[in-house]
Length: 498
Ligand code: ZN
Image (tube, rainbow, N blue to C red; front, top):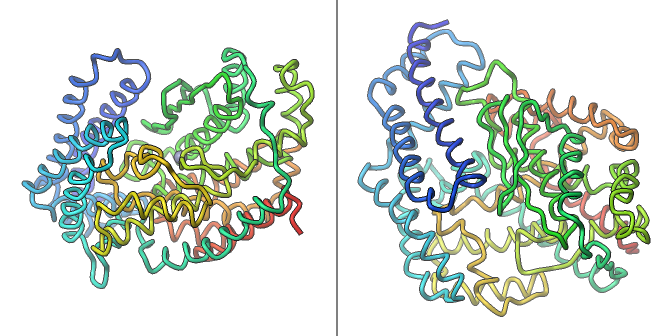
């Protein structure tokens, strides 16, 4: 092991400690802290994060990264140095003054956005958004690689290797196949009523079942916590302490269940990262999209399948004997897979979800290349919803103002949600060729599924970049056709389309 590498690790240890403390405060704010804690705690978190950045951008650490890279290192160590170099480079390219300005702008923008959404008043948010777009472009330009567009640089920040050259054909394929498939489901498919899932379901019983569900799909309660928060999320402090939340609604039985399975999918990924990587810069998932692939695979491909519910549904029906008396297992599976185009992305069903993301991609692209004036956003947004989903928002609150992402400066983030679904379909197909997934699910034995995912994906953490991880796990490069085939087969079957 190299001497400079060892010295570099003493700094990494401090950075990891700061990052973990920030994560723990974040968890606390979302789940347990009293309302008045927020402002002061946010200040403490800001201080922790600037100490982190100070260490990373310091000349000492810069020098050590360069020297360690020259030493003889194993694969994991090389990956650690690579990730540190990448993050440091990204931060150092941006002039400190501009970075601070941008951080202040986005910190304040969240409130402007929240007010505009509450008052259904896009015009009051438009100037702030225009400012964010301008500054994001400037900042992205510092990190632009040769031949890249500004939007590419933004996209790469979240999903390296997945710029417009990949995403344009990806979304074109979705548009070409999913938009007409949706129209057929809506016109030729028999409508599915989910009224039985809208009765009153005692929350304490839901809690009991959700805890069981999390454990069933592999969430290890010796290394994890399940709590409640407004919006479900996962936070991995390290692979022996992974925390997830869910949200219970008395009248929406399936909502908490699928949030729990989704977040458990994220958590199992974090828990299965090799112990040799714990508390290093490569301990988390490979990328946003790869992380999302693991939650979506668990939620949709496993968690909404008939084989999954075959042994489980009787248990759910026993718990809610009165409410679910007239609902067969087959009915239940049809209900949890119902297609219903809606205005809100986070409530979208599996088939329409990617169209919500596609709309945001098309808009971001034009917003960044300058062909779309921010003030035009509501009209363009509503037209696209009408064209692709057949629904038109009547207010901006349930239209262009629904997501917080742009106010936070996260332009280029949305596509990773759709990529995650497509990665999941490709991974699922590869796994299905090697093990009998449905057979395992029918036997209530998810161990083979988890073992396969751990071996092929999870254990590597961030050591392998996403494109390589996907290729090694599935035997081929990213291929979105698997996702199209999966959706087509699933929904023509469920809706009995010819
Ligand atoms: Zn997720």
